[in-house]
Amino acid sequence: MTSTVSAPGTRTAEGSALQAVLLDMDGTLVDTEGFWWDVEVDIFARLGHTLDDSWRHVVVGGPMSRSAGFLIEATGADITLAELTVLLNEGFEDRIGRALPLMPGAARLLAELAEHEIPTALVSASHRRIIDRVLTSLGPQHFALTVAGDEVPRTKPHPDPYLAAAAGLGVDPARCAVIEDTATGVAAAEAAGCHVVAVPSVAPISPAARRTVVPSLEQVDLTFLRGLIPVS
Image (cartoon, rainbow, N blue to C red; front, side, top):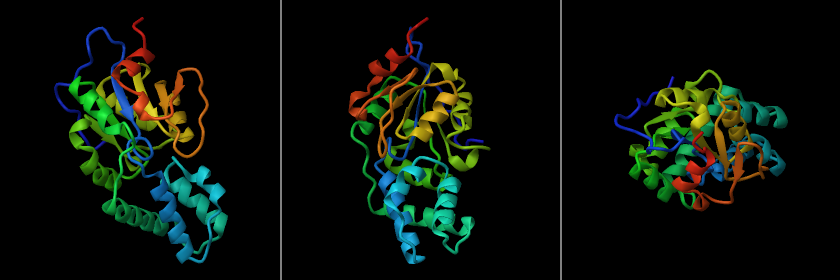
């Protein structure tokens, strides 16, 4: 379940087929994908293991259970999944407490969506405790609801988080634009039937049907998003 209730009074601009915009968090709105990797490297160094930089592409963008499980198996570290999850969340909270840079164009895009009263949701594989910390910088008023990775039966790359967001907003997933930065997030959004704007952060993403790839959020505005879903 999502723990943020839909905000009243949201509406879509008349004549537009776009019903809502759903946004990923880490690497999409906030420049934190590198934070997760730095925390993982630090934790495993303390456990006596060195992480291979090529693993970064494996663990980016997915559920913490998958990423943490992969690193435990790959290193043979003597730590349980539950113990590592606690350390990862604590380490990440410490990092964002010191600095939380927004991605270029993020603040402007969120302000524009709010100005035009476009229903907007934050959809992340991060846990609720992390989302709530990040929202203090992003501004909770920018989102009608938020969906955390530990609040759905299956998180990304499964479609559940985006289906939950669309249901919470009362909109058709096929008339939603999703903004993502990883292949895992893109797969989740596409499986839910959404139109996707990919802004790659760590690994490249190729264009495809119902998927547009741009180098930065600075290339994304409301006119661009409306153009993805023409009026039928």
